[in-house]
Length: 145
Image (cartoon, rainbow, N blue to C red; front, side, top):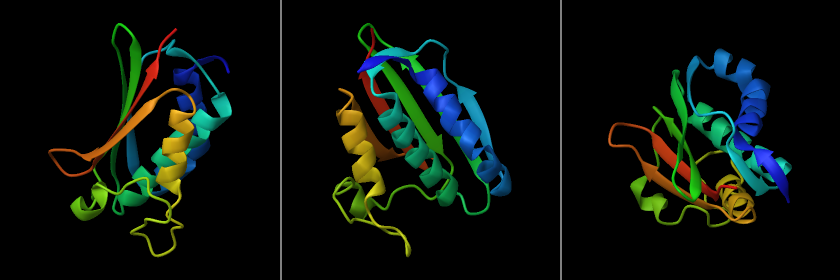
C-alpha cells in the first residue's frame, strides 16, 4: 500500500466515465476536497469508485444528478456518492454485497461485492442505503494519514 490521494483517483474514474454521463444526461456535482490522503491500493479504489459511478449512471434511466462529496473527521476521510436514481430495493438492501445478488437483467451480481471487498482491503468501511428523497447513498470511510 502506498500514499494515495482519493480526490485524484476519483477524478480519474470521472474522466473515464465523462462521455457515459453526458450520453445519459447525468449531471455531476463535485463536492469533494483536494488532498484526501490515505494509504491504500490506488488500482483497487479506482475500480471501486468506477463501479459505484457506473451503477449510479445506470440507475438514472432518464438522467439525473450524481453528487460526490467528501468529509474529514479527526481520523477518517469519508467519500459519499448520492444519485437521484431509483435507489435500492428495500428487500435487497439487507443483502447487498452477497455474491450474485442482482436486480439487473444483465448483471452478474458481483459489482457491489467487489466494491465492498476492495474498500475493506484498503482498511475502509462501505455503507449502502437509500436517500430520504429518491436515490441511493453510498459512503466509504478510510483512515486518513
